Length: 175
Image 1 (spheres, helix red, strand yellow):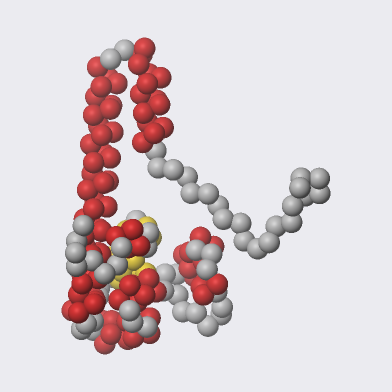
Image 2 (cartoon, helix red, strand yellow):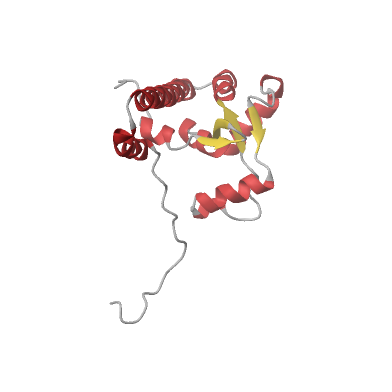
């Protein structure tokens, strides 16, 4: 564990999303992690926009924003005044450290880069395990098919339960 860590790694990992086929973090989450206001982060980026090409940063479109709001059930996400957040790729996040001039931003950026590396390593490890499993399956006959199917089920990512919004009254007779 890094003694310099100021944000738990799990907190960072939970804020990495997949949009447009890229792993990204949102301006709202990054501002929170860096300890700055979202508008200050976005303002710093806009003052240095030449450092943030489209493959480093993009703004969520309306449909992506609606999907995000439906997945993240937090009251602060609603409201008509809210601007759609920006999504920063790993390269865009690395570039943020050059436009945010605080020691906290630098330290948090280092932790974020480590989280992205850890995520890449996990994905690579999973792919290698799947290849090895496939090779074993080809080598052995059908009698082990049940075992291989069970292992594949264990390797599958767990489905996230859908959160219900609002209050739900219990049906009569179920108390």
